[in-house]
Length: 200
Ligand SMILES: Cc1cc2nc3c(=O)[nH]c(=O)nc-3n(C[C@H](O)[C@H](O)[C@H](O)COP(=O)(O)O)c2cc1C
Image (cartoon, rainbow, N blue to C red):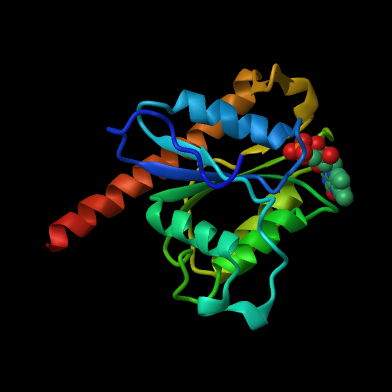
């Protein structure tokens, strides 16, 4: 899968990009995003972005020198209404693949495609108590690039392996928190759209 894949319904107005930072074929975090894509189909088009073609960040390659996969990522983010990040905890922090993508997306500083972009955040962990540190670090990184982390109850999906069946999140409690975060994102997007329309 390359680039962002939106669903078939062309009438859907809210376009979201999902990113996890896991390149693993059986990724639990991607399974959560897939579940959300299905749950919100008809209200939002959640495309899950494949970050595998994104090279390591290099400050020599900014602006027009950006590699093509990076240009495509930035374009997709710019065209989207918001992001859904569902990150697995790696060494008590953000997986490098996701952080690398965010580093590219955060430039130029404070005026990047991430500035003022609404973002719903969640974290997963196979452990019974982990994930919170990853979520916190994701939020701190997003703050630095002026992204709008939407206000919602914190969504940390612990013991995630036991909550995924056939590639979908089946635990009702965790699903409730994850859906709550996306609902908050949709609400935020609608609010900003209304405010923008009133300015015209
Ligand atoms: C390098 C590395 C570091 C990890 N560090 C943590 C950690 O600090 N906390 C944790 O709960 N899980 C940790 N894990 C376990 C991952 O969260 C787990 O493998 C998870 O399933 C990966 O996400 P995915 O299922 O979306 O691919 C780590 C895994 C790897 C490969």
